[in-house]
Amino acid sequence: MHVLDWLVVGVYLVWMVWDGVRRTEDSDKVEGYLLANRSLPWWAVGLSVMATQLSAITLVGGTGQGYADGMRFVQFYFGLPIAMVLLSVTLVPFFYRARVYTAYEYLERRFDLKTRTLASILFLCSRGLSCGVIIAAPAVILSIILGWNLTLTILAIGLPTAIYTMVGGVQAVTWTDVKQMAVIVVGLVAVVVALVVGLPADVSFLDALHVAGATGRLKAVDFRFDWNQTYTFWSGLLGGLFLMLSYFGCDQSQVQRYLTARSVSEGRDSLMMSAFVKIPLQALVVLTGVLVFVFYLFQQPPMLFNRVHAAKIAASDRAADFERLDAEFAAAFAARRSAAEALAGSADDASRASAAGAFRKTDAAVKEVRAKAAQLVREVTGDDRYKDRTGDTPAPDVNYVFPTFVTTRLPPGLVGLIIAAIFAAAMSSIAAELNSLATSSVIDIYRRLLRPVASDAHFLSVSKILTGFWGLVACVVAVYAAGLGSLIEVVNRFGSFFYGSLLGVFVLALASKRATGTGAFVGLLAGMAAVAAVAMHPTTSGISFLWHNPIGVIVVVSVGSMVSMVTQPTSPERTA
Amino acid sequence: MLPPEDEAPATRMYVLVVVCEVLAIAGLWLLGRAFAV
Image (cartoon, rainbow over all chains, first blue to last red; front, side, top):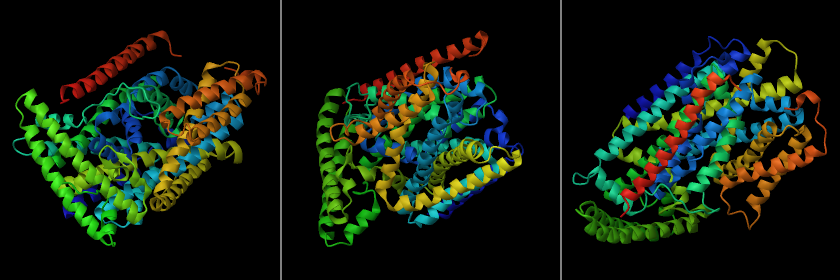
């Protein structure tokens, strides 16, 4: 990496730590440290909500999806605006009026202690592990692409974040999120400009879109109904609605963002920002990937984006096979480039249709060579994930597309900016998670179960220690997760087991006056068991994980209501 | 919930969110149609 890029990344890291650790003015009390005394403006909270959701994997994986499979990934977010409206009407005012620190605190007021404790333990286990994954995933990619030491990369992402979150609390999280969001958006826009400028002189932006359209990559909306597909209009709108309701309504890492707003109205406005901006922003992320695809139609891409596998095969006894495939790939690419140039130069619809047919044939040939390369990877390295494909790219290679493009094709300075943007996306999510993990540990477990009576200063110290503790846990998990690719999938799946069920408990709390604590508790366990059964049973395991959330809600509400009919509320005043 | 005078602007905002989402999806659908070859 060029010295200018090191400078940009270094300045970014120092800026974030400096900006975070100076936010201590209102953090001398627990409410100031964890909730900023409920004093933050809606726009800062809104940007923090968006930065928390946009992790490095969303940024790198989203552009990779755009490259490999086109814009249909954006449908994943179609349920988000509706979820924001529903939460603004229901849970947000409830949380504000209850003056809670955590979403799970509300469950004790409405139901009982065991329901609250189970919900917070599920959150702590799931988020504690996923925080490690959020650090590990971009660290693995950056270390491979840039040749960095993996452990040092993990520490470069995790340590500064843990330091400023520990010192400055939620104020540090929010105000660094604001800057990190700016770095991400500026970085993305800069890449789009660089991609458009980098097109061949005789290929205009509109020509580029026509070429992308010929491969179906601009088809963003798919109205087919298929339980097994994650990226369709219906999966995104209905399944995605439940996922977003769970994430923004029941996950402390998001709930804590809007609890810091000055009022109910500002809390709702912060969610409205995501409702308006999320789909266009995500469309920009995916479109960037599509433009990377168009760029690589005219400039030869690597056959395998993950260099480690390419290097392993080159060093094995199958090196000759790899070389032969590489030559085949170069020939297929040259034929596709000629066909793409002909398509881009087509003047009318008839010639464009004919050129598109020829182009698709050459594109299929490139895809076929990549499939052979993936098979070779499986045979040499035993990495079974290479049997799956996303569009025309081996699935595990998708996350390497964008960083490869950035580090090999962009000018010095801009490379540093994009790496800083990837760091920003990771750090903004990690900071919010560390902050919420500490909050739930202190409020739901330590203060509620272990040490109910102590001074505010004591709880403040414990909050800071636990923030550091969770930072340490996240870094340790990241080091282990980085070496075990499948662990990342396990952690993501674990979250989907209880997300919908947790939402079901909140639905039960708000919608049913007769629901009891025991009903909610049994319903939550039944919901998780049902989702685990659906996810693991051979006949239903193909169902997209987006549908696990509505299944969880339905089971919790049904079982919870039935159990509530035969059980008594914990105390009369706790009925809604 | 909130007093009625606070609910009216919020309701207008919610309607605007839904309208914008419909427009965004329609725009994305049209993008696919316009450049399909």
